[in-house]
Length: 286
Image (cartoon, rainbow, N blue to C red; front, side, top):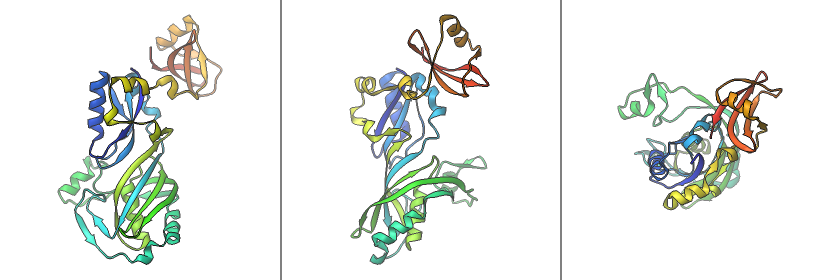
């Protein structure tokens, strides 16, 4: 089995747990293109077999989330799991729909973001959460992120919560976005719920629930490497050139620098790359 399956992760499961489960089901090497926190739900693409070799083409995908932001409370981790650090009354006037929409619009575009202290980013060889747990001070470097779109979905005035959808670049911390939005609204807040609905072209509608995971469902729902790169141009190789290609020999091809699907006698072989008119083997499936 070689390819990718899309899991609809349930709350409480770690990405590592799901990788281990799929590895046990398939008997293949399994990896992922980016973890989801145990409290988060939604789209988790898993690479299976030689599909793991495709990771480099998938890790920079944009992501879409549906987020529930709780106002009036600040937590140590920025999410439901942390300790309450601060509480304050939220004026109902702050929950005006038009005002919140104006605040959200201000977040669209490229910006510098300071990641949360409870994160796995390394600073001076240590993960940030290690500093947090030992209550050690550390200078957290900012990083460039991009918010492509953000829109308000719902306001729950009774519980002082707002729900919004955000499409953002890789590496964006939604917990930080939640705290920044709350601040702009005029209060404090934390990320109460997070659902990832899309990673690149992979949507939640394609996803298998953990409860339905078995060998048959994986076989039925796996996206092959050929399907994964369906929009790439094809290159046909004869038997002689195919053997050279498989042996790692660079072949002359008058093609633009890009990634190509490789076929021989109508059979999908894998992926090759062209640079300076030379075709080189990259991923071989068969």
